[in-house]
Length: 334
Length: 290
Image 1 (cartoon, rainbow over the protein chains, first blue to last red):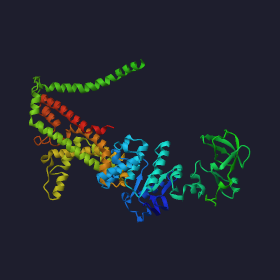
Image 2 (cartoon, each protein chain N blue to C red):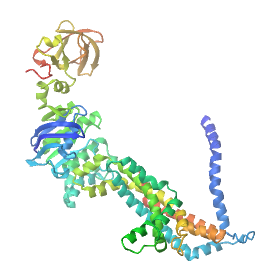
Image 3 (tube, each protein chain N blue to C red):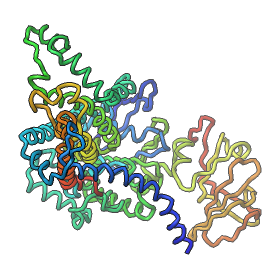
Image 4 (cartoon, one colour):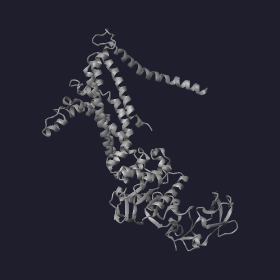
């Protein structure tokens, strides 16, 4: 079980309210990702759920029981920290066994659980090493192992992959997703990387300045962002926004078109612009096109073989059913 | 070629400093060694003669030597115990956020800046004096007999005075070590179900181990040679109750005018200090590695 409900919770540090009243329902077995720019309150929200920070008002319910005043250790949640927070003077074995030791479980049961966790995480050969002798990915797995052995109601991850290099990050992303498939335990995952959010989540919670902007499945957020902020935050490269006469044509204050929904042509199209930088990734090419009346260059994603150069005049055409319209409050027009 | 030349030049350049430092150490050491083999009394000048091992024999069989040895070890051990336990507790306290933290931290180091003679005299006259001292005043206030610290518990009183001086040093080093502890580690332990005592034992103490080692090493070096506090309070007495090795050597050479015997004691003290140093390095040196 791992059902978590936040009811009207707020958090203030001194006079600054970092989380205005907020409601959120997390169902059992869900993989929920909190995503947002730096300083949006996503880590604070996670720490409130963990109990490492006290809520200023509102209640937190875990599995139907009010957990607002329950100390962190008693909430049945396990957390994986950004710095991994391994105990440097203990071996991997002792690190993983630490929560069991604190719970007063006998030695034989501890060993069995540690061995099982180590097997799942491929750490069996490293059990007698110190954290200092491990690579970043291995440390990450030890931190996850320490969380697994407690058999928590939910796992909390605080930007766990941000200290790893790009290749390892993709690997660990898969491993965590697989772990979720096999354990079926609720996981709450904080990240600022929308790619991690899109690839791992059952449900994404987009936060800005402590407010929830939208909650939904990855594709829901991609196809029907509730407002301009979510539209710009989800999707890579970012959505292009056009205002003024471009938007008037569609009865909107702003229109948004994703780079992958623009077709580029040498001869004819809806809008005209001049190619600035083009990035060739092999599979794709990103063109940054400067258009008159638009401040920022328009990003276009096209096939890898496209042969435009700096300064070429190109014509762009958006896919008509993929244009997102926003009113003057930046809200989506259905 | 160029490197060889510059290396030679470098050696030439640093040689005056090296020679000066070497001489600074070698000359007094060899003079002490030389004197320790002479029958050299300041009361009968000009009568120095070769004495062989007699000075050593007298010094090492003197009952005062064993008393002084025991006192030295008790003094070092007692002060280390008080400063490290007290230092860890004070550091834990000062690490908590409270109003006026900055000023309190500065005040805490203050005793370290007071010179030993002054602090020992303040303790002797203002606190421990059986007639005018604060402790006597409190004892009388509670209706008790004032306790004459310096005559009835001389070594303990000196341990107290010296510990008071060294407590800030230990506190400061341990406080900085405590502040360098990653707060996420403590939070992780908290989530893992560790209460404060467990967090202290399993996370903080291992983290502090290296700093405690440094405190022990540095303090031992200085505590082996405590002198001023004894001179101004008890003069090593009553009897030999508060005489340590340093004070015994002083008494031998300058109170009994026996420079030869004092020098022999000095050489013995050097050897003993090195034995202590070897033991210390063996016991806790491994904490400083890695």
